[in-house]
Amino acid sequence: DIQMTQSPPSLSASVGDTVTITCRASQAINIYLAWYQQKPGKAPKSLIYDASTLQSGVPSRFSGSGSGTDFTLTISSLQPEDSATYFCQQYTLHPLNFGGGTSVELK
Amino acid sequence: EVQLLESGGGLVQPGGSLRLSCAASGFTFNAYAMNWVRQAPGKGLQWVAGTTIDGGGLQYAVSVRGRFTISRDTSKSTLFLEMKSLRADDTAVYYCTRALVGYNGCFDSWGPGTLVTVSS
Image (cartoon, rainbow over all chains, first blue to last red; front, side):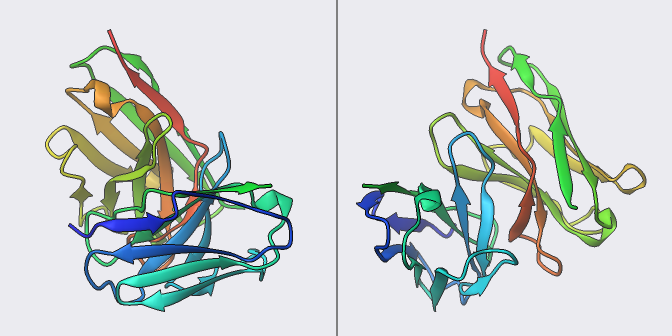
């Protein structure tokens, strides 16, 4: 199985800050990585697939990068509505494992 | 508008069974792979099972293999998850997900989820 490790588990930042979340795969997954945003009590929402391709309708302040084993999700100019938990997920091989999540809190 | 709506969750005793359904609308159901993902209370996301476009290519998480069965009815645009021998650690919100077109395991749409509670 491919294990996905996210860091940090949580962070606190101010409106306007740039936030970076990292995701590391236990083996190379090419670019087959997705990012999701989940707000309390809601279903996850797809943000990015193929490591860097934004889903339709996702604000351009979200960006993704990486390939192989190391990936990042960057939120530029953090907004209040970005307070949420973010998950990465690999889809190279089954089982389709998710990272443990990163909780982003606004100061 | 793409819509996925799960149903069938509830309280069940350990060892019991449940059948979840996911009614899909707003897209051509038989053109997309479909999956179930679950989330235990206060925990992260866990992929459970998936089916390819033609209903074959069935894949399961190790923890549910042999107990859960995923299937789809194209005529009704509905995805199912038959769950047997349920355990306390199956307690979770179960989400129906649609895979991005041309992909099997990258999810672009999610239902609101249905809660399954396994407890005596």
